[in-house]
Image 1 (tube, one colour):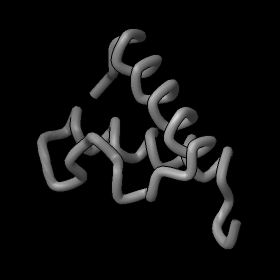
Image 2: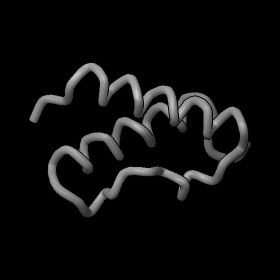
Image 3: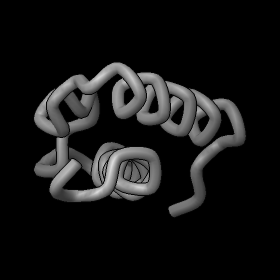
Length: 57
C-alpha cells in the first residue's frame, strides 16, 4: 500500500502539531484497526508524534 504525498504530509503535519501542543497520543485521527490506508497513516502519525514528544516527556 502506498500513500499519496498529500496523505503523508497531512499525517506528518498533524502529528507534529499535536506533539508540540501536548495533545495526548490517543488524539491520533487515524484508526489503527481500519483499512490498510488508515493503519499506515496511524503508524506514520505515531512515529512522527514520538519523534517530537518522546515517551516520558
